[in-house]
Amino acid sequence: MAYHFSPRRERLNAVLVVGDTSTPDGLADVTALAHEVAVRMQVPAVIAMGRDYDVRAYDTLVYDEGSYLENVDAAVLWAEASSDEADMAVMNLDDLESFDFMVVCGWCGEPDEDDPMPTLVEGVWIPAEFCGGCLNEARRQGRVDA
Image (tube, rainbow, N blue to C red; front, top):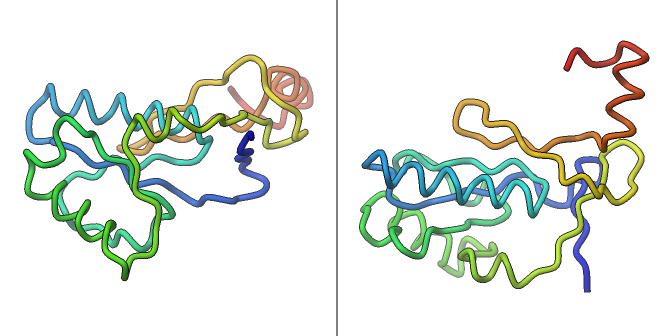
């Protein structure tokens, strides 16, 4: 079974990604995990820096299994998201990899075979919205600068 996520359908608004961000290596690991989330799920993946987040504002929390318990902020966010009150999905990378996500273009809705890469903007991985054909057409029409 394939799960389709598209910016047009907005099935998921955003995913909060937690782990130990207190060291440069830890931050790099969490940033890489957030990138994987954005690529697979095609939704914005927010890197949690500290614990000043309302986990209920996100549809899913993805945690770095190797480090989330080593950081108090990450552990608190994980515990909040795991509570019955939060009523949200909580998963690690293994859980994420068990789903068959299909990347679709946000404009034409067709499967995107080119695997567009997301862009990191202020701690949030933003998924690509165009497949290669739509991006070229949008450029030709002057609708995008990129």
